[in-house]
Figure 1: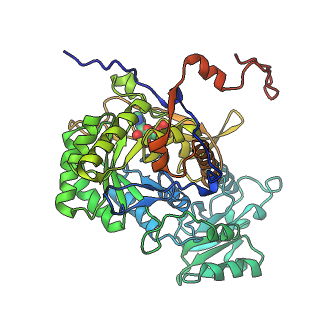
Figure 2: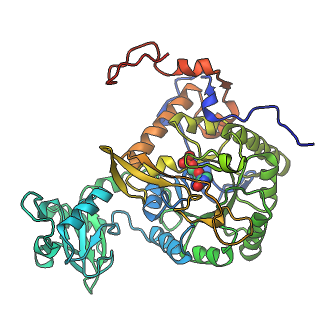
Figure 3: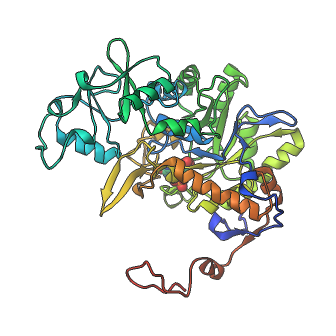
Length: 503
Ligand code: IMP
């Protein structure tokens, strides 16, 4: 007979935290959000401890090298998407590992024979106003000039005017030579009253750009997550098909931690992948596995050597797995059960295997709830897709800026490896949608605000660390009626064009 769990599958919005006693010490500046990402033995330190409990999803619309640098600056880790060629994923990892703070690879590049129309399109799409003009239109091509908003007035120039006619050409451009320090670059910027400085090599190929506005921010990233060589820590997604080629390439590129990215991880495919990694690299290579939603799934992946376990099936914002296949579990129920399994495993073996709640975070307070329910860290897709640093295009939709956000199980991503069960190499039906999310500005500002809220709630609960929150949180289920009470109600909201009474 089938087993029917009597407890309903619950999600974050069905819970609230009950505040605990807050001493005078319970202030946000005293809260630590440090958290382990890889397993460790009792009394030992984990190989990687993050400074904030956030990682970005293994998705084309979320995690590339730009996202990885931006998130590592804040203290978290991006898992660069695996649904691309091995070579291009390894290149992204390499870019993060060789990133020098303040020297950014130019991500807006055109050729001199392109037109003002191309400039305006690129500016609209990316939100960036500095465009490098290179011979071949690539980020490392021979530099021919720069275009910024100062170089053209849209009302005075025909949209078909060639860039070569209005760009700032090399003989008028201030540039720096590869090898100069950030502070030297900054001096050149100030001495010449420019806003950005292209850095070129001896053959005049563009290497990077230094921006005036970035200098101060690079001096103040107290949480940045660095390895022993002072490079940013970076993660990458792998699959259970081409791991024998992908893993060595990523390791060679310097990846710090990987995760097997699959919609359903309680499978022999994951065991085979983990075994191969352990046989070939022992414990030197760090790899998480998932996704699972119960104790059996957790125990299975840990037994086969996972460094952390990812939880979540069907709760992602772009996910239609539950509708398509009828599998999944409410994210809160899944996290609570797996956290219990993790604690039991620790009790039994003295080995702590961190768990990651993946997907379904809608409000900032869901982050606090996920941690309180036992998650050591949280993976987010929709949240990060909205920021400047995500790889997707920024588009104007009905008068509002949006960013594109599509699931790895959508036809657009063509990521059949994530869903494949050993059959032929194609996606048979979609498990994700292609969508827009409201553009929300910079990652730094948003992450700071979200984590300020998390810290503030932790103070209300009288705890100063994630460990303490997990141990001492008191949660309550909320009834449908009390959910209504939780928002503004029985008032006429002033900023709505149509007055609404929320009841
Ligand atoms: P979000 O933070 O709610 O947007 O969820 C992101 C998570 O959804 C990812 O980390 C994946 O685990 C999952 N995911 C990504 N693409 C798909 C898809 O196409 N279908 C189902 N789940 C997906």
